[in-house]
Length: 604
Picture 1: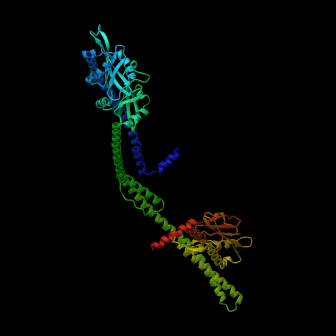
Picture 2 (picture 1 turned 45 degrees about the horizontal axis):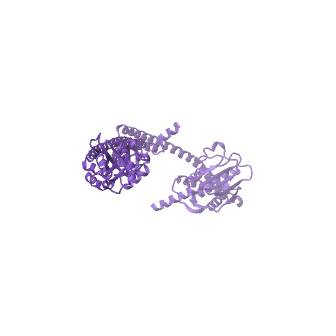
Picture 3 (picture 1 turned 180 degrees about the vertical axis):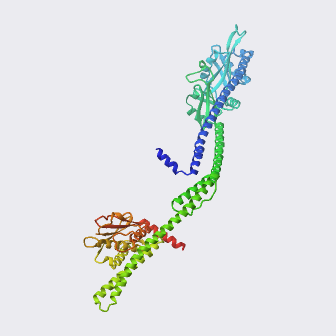
C-alpha cells in the first residue's frame, strides 16, 4: 500500500501537488462551511420562530382577555336592564318577538334568552341561523359559569359566549326570571387581528376542523390533510410543509377540558410561522459564502500562477533538461529563471551539461577513430585479398600457352573477386546511409524475396547451395523494396555461407507468413549454427565469425532495415541445429510508416 502511494506521489507534478490541496480545501471545506452555517442559521431561525410563536400565543391571550372583560361588562349591563327583565315575565311568543330589539342594541354576534330552567326561548346570530337544539346543548355548560366566558363551537363556527342570570329584585334573594347569553364570533377578522399583531399565520380549529384562518384556502386544505393531530391536541414547535413552504407550528387549547362540548376535541389556536425569511437568509449566506469561496479560489489560482512562474516552471524545465540529457541530447539549454536557488541549480546543471557534452564529443571522436581503424583494417585486408586474386589470375591469363578451360576458370575467379569487391563497397555505402527516411511503396513481399534469392544465387558464396522458397504468400505491403530486399539478400547470403560449413548437403529455406498483426520472413539453413560466443554481439558492426572475408555488416544492415520498417529481426535457433533468422514486420507499423511518408511528401 505504501509503495503504491509513493508511486502515486512520484507521478504527480509539483504544480498538481500544490493545486490538489487548494482544490481539496476549497471543495471540501465549502460544503462543510455551508452545512455548519446552515445549521447555525436554522437553529437561530427556529429559536426566533419559536419565540415569535410564543409571542403570538401571548398576543391572543391578551386580546382574549380584553374581549372577555368587554363581553362580561356587556352581558352584565344587559342582565340589569329593567326592560329586559320585564320582557322575561311575558309569554314565550312575546319574548321571542321582543328579544330581537335587545340583540340589535347589544351589537354582538350571538344573543340568546333562556327561561329559569335553562331551556332556550330564542337565539339570534349573524349569518346562517343556528339550530336551537345545538345552541341549547351548548349553553348548558355556560349556565354553570356565569362569571366567565366560554368558547362555544356551533355548526363549524366558534363563539366566545358569556351568560348572566336575569333576577327580579336583589341578585341574591330575588326571584330568577331566566338567563341572557351574548357572544362574539371568533372568525377571520379575529384571526387577522391576531395575525397582524403576531406577524404569523393564525388558525382557529374545533372538533379537528378549521373554523377560521388567515391561510389561503388551498393551504387550509393542506393543513387539514397533513397536520395530523395538530388541530386537535397540544403541539409545540412542530415542522410542517404547506404548499412547498416549511412552517413552524404551535397548537394550544383555548378552553379547559370540562368546557369541551360533545365528543370532538375542544377549540384550538394554531399559530404558523413561515421559514421563508430564514430560508432567504440561508440562501443569502450561501451566496456570500460561495462568492467568498470563488474569490479565494481565484486568489489561490493567482498565487498558484505566481508560484508556477517562480518555482514550478523552472523546476519542470530542469526536469526536461535532465530527461534530454538522459536521452543523449547534450544541446538542451536551460533558461536561468525562478528564485535564486533554482537559478543556482540551473547554472550548476548547465556547467554539468557542457562538461558532459565535451566528454561525450571526446568519446565519440575516440570511438569514431577506433571504428575507422577497424573498418580500414578490414577493408584493406579484404581489398588486398581480392586485388591479389585478380592480379595473380590476370597474370596467369596473359600466358599464351594456357588452355581455354583453365583460362575460363581463371576468368570466373576474377569475376568472383570483382563481385566480392562490389558487395563490400555496397555494404559500406548502405551502412553510411542507414537512418535516412524510407521511400515506402505498395509492393509484393514475395517479389522482393524472389529478387533477393535470385541475386544471392549468382554470388560465389551460394555455389553448390540449394535455395528453396516455400510458401511465398501473395502478400503486399507498404515497404521500401530496395532496402528490404537488401536485408533479405544479406540473410540469404549469410545462410548460404553457414550451410556450406555444415556437414550435410547445403540447404537454405525461405518462407513468408502472414497473420492479422504481422508479416514474417524466415530464412533457415542447415549449417552448424551461430556460436554462443557471438550471439550477444552478432548484430553489431564488424562482427564476423567463421568467414574468410567480409566486413561483418550483413546482420547489422538487416537489423537496421527491419527497425526502420518498424519491425525486428530475431534468431530462433542456432546451436548445432542450423539457424533460423526471422524478420517480423508489424502491419500497424507499416501503415504508420506510410502515413509519415505522406506527411513528408506534403511538406516538400
